[in-house]
Amino acid sequence: MYRSHTCGELRMEHVGQPVTLAGWVQTVRKLHANMTFVDLRDRYGITQILLGESLSAQLEAQPLGREFVIQVKGTVSERTAKNPNIPTGDIEIIVSEFKILNSSKTPPFTIQDDTDGGDELRMKYRYLDLRRNIVKQNLTLRYRVNRAARNFLDSRGFMEVETPYLIKSTPEGARDFVVPSRMNPNQFYALPQSPQTFKQLLMVSGYDRYYQIVKCFRDEDLRADRQPEFTQIDCEMSFVDQEDVLGNFEEMTKHIFREIKGIEFNEPFPRMTWDDAMKYYGNDKPDIRFEMKLVDLGEVGRGNGFKVFDDAELVVGINVSGCSEYTRKQLDELTEWVKRPQIGMNGLVYIKHNTDGSLKSSVDKFFNEQALKLFADQCQSQPGDLILILAGKEERTRKAMSELRLEMGERLGLRNKDVYKPLWVIDFPLFEYAEEENRWVARHHPFTAPKPEHIHLMDDLSQYAKIKANAYDIVLNGTEIGGGSIRIFQRDLQEKMFSALGMSKEEADHKFGFLLGAFEYGAPPHGGIAFGFDRFCSLLGGSETIRDFIAFPKNNSGRDVMLDAPSSIDQVQLDELALSLVKK
Image 1 (cartoon, rainbow, N blue to C red):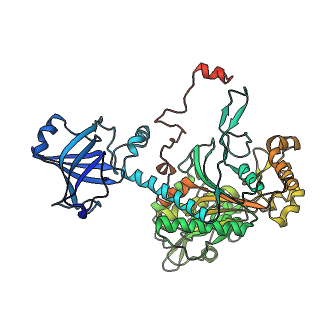
Image 2 (cartoon, helix red, strand yellow):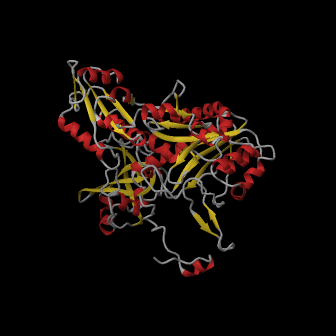
Image 3 (cartoon, rainbow, N blue to C red):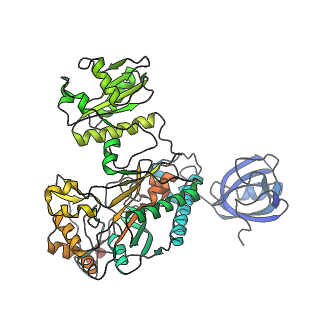
């Protein structure tokens, strides 16, 4: 027996008991020649052990170092100098014998919460980084979220069904990862971007409540909340409408918060249409932890001889409470912030609503006090507030103001990561126009059903912008954590959707003939949702990057620096796969 207890479970009630522990040496503190203290660590915690005079000769012959794996036998004793910061801080082990199970090289970084290792170094030695308590806590949270979701879904009659990882490439969204087939030369599998068509086929098969916590793969450019492989809580239900789906998965979200954070949501999650989200927040995933809504100022801004406003497709502002005392230096810094390439604006207009009620702007040459009052009234500004205004092309300006709103929320401490504000965004457009492709594309995916009252508009290309989808996203603190829709389940409507996307009948049959055929054999009405599991975990854990909650993540270039992947393969493998490399 290597151990009788873990390094995290011994307490005062164990004093006097003989125990055997095994773990990794966190620190070694030699007080004097005859007394050495060691912090012994395992997955469960840290226990202090004391190696006294009787072991000094063995320690001289076999000195301990950081990250050595050792086994100790001894007796639990009450500590004289207790440590209230750890659960085992009241006790220590008086060691009678120890054994080095494996020695360790000096680690490339300190294995503690405030490590001196940079991201790339820790990713290269991820198996060491995973020993750090903070990373362990993240993976523990991930496991608990996984278990809470499974328990909830099981209680609601959902059945987990595994779907294939080697499928057919049907590039309609992100790029596929493709896998060559040795047995079928010059043909390729694709790794699934989601199990979408399979879960719809399961509904056709009568498995009316399906779920899967599943890996998905997308060959996309990376960022903090995106990895080439990621995990979804993927769900589908039959004989449901939008209310049924929203109701079930709002309850699941509440259950997870209750289990993981001890937070109760007693009220229904608010709902917001996509149109309102874009109008008042400038994006389709609003952070509603604070107000500061966007206000259209075109009506009061144009016609005063200020060319920037007069020529703009959109003049939009936000009212920032309590910031009228911003200095010129602070305002200049904000102006430079909106001029950055990531934001792309030419400048920023401000109006100070001073505490005495007077109004002062950066464009006083064009707007007198009476005109400025119209801006203040439109923004519902109060003395002490600051109005920030952007103008320009509609889409770019709205997006820029959305980013400025979030930036001001950050600077003013309004985006508290310990405050959680979920909401549903509903009534998305079914289509969006892709300028570079000169065609309409599906905003979500081509299996999303239009609102029943909008189906007739699909016959008229000029009406596509008006068609709303039976689609919905769940948003948390300005981040989309899940999205789904009611699906098309009739062949004729699905064919009409493919046609609207510019797909010929032959192409639709080639790519999706299996699904169209299935719809002819009694497909039920169905709909579902998929949660971004990694993203949800990172928000619950108070982190901005999902890498912190994935055991073995890729870096920002999509590389596994620990394995050095992706990598080349030898010529024998290339020949077996009937592949040849193109030399640049």
